[in-house]
Image (cartoon, rainbow, N blue to C red):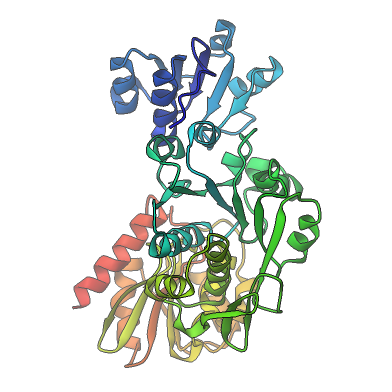
Length: 452
């Protein structure tokens, strides 16, 4: 890593721990900063805080005392999940103390160029596809997953070599806290309405995503979804070279034409050869193809990587086949749009859908068109009655109610036949019955394993 002296003897407050905060605090300590960590979790329940204290880092836990900011900090490194409305953050901004997220630190120390990926849906899948494509074709170095995908960027950047590439998933929360971060290649998968409670409005959310390219120049590349007129219009404001991708038209980048995926005039592979189903995954693959070609990867390496990619856990993930019935885990589909996109990748006449979860007060009228033609639906959780009503409105003939994911699996299997697919795509958050979507997906896969 670059041995920067920017933070030598500077007082820095790390606000919020978890993995990214722990990584940032340890890195800043190693760079010679005078680090104070503040985390809301009590010290006795906070192994990260205990480890940092053992290193000589000042640790304050259990609350966020506003008077902390009287200590003359030069910088605040904020956990991305902490909103800007938090009193300590607000006070720091009032005092003109810069507030960043740890991905900014990663950029400052990284010897490897960064490929940054953001968007509302498909970030993790596209990030993983890109890493697989690069690792299939790179002669020197490797593509290293980092960022919002679960590997703190400031940790990964410390060991990255110049010949490597940091393939960094970036959320809108992280992007709000960047200043100098400049990817060599940036990807925006799509933008829909999300996280309004955090950003305050859709325009502010879009601006947060758009920050990804704010430091890019004509020497850099912005890979962007041409299926979305909003992104096409925004691209005119970027200084980077624009590389569009589209499933709807031929563009000067990556596109689908007559079932084939192309980069410019080169045919790369057939869409049906992708290892994961769904129109949304064709978009993700096109973005990955564009990045692969920009990095001079051979077509055969790109094709092999995308053929063998079977999905990220809980995101239209292929699980197994039992008695010629395929099972897919899309537990990450915590809203209607995600389930709509997942359903677009399957033949409804041979599909049994599992859906349900936390009742947020919304109806499922928007989902009705996507449910039409389903072979069957099994609903569970707080929203099962609402989903049953939507399925009835869609004309689904077989609608079964059950308690949870575990009981839904054998019911769905009893309704299926050889050649069918069973898909968990809940269209709801998991918190009525499970602590998170990962646990829900794991319960689904365990129930499938029980069928064997």
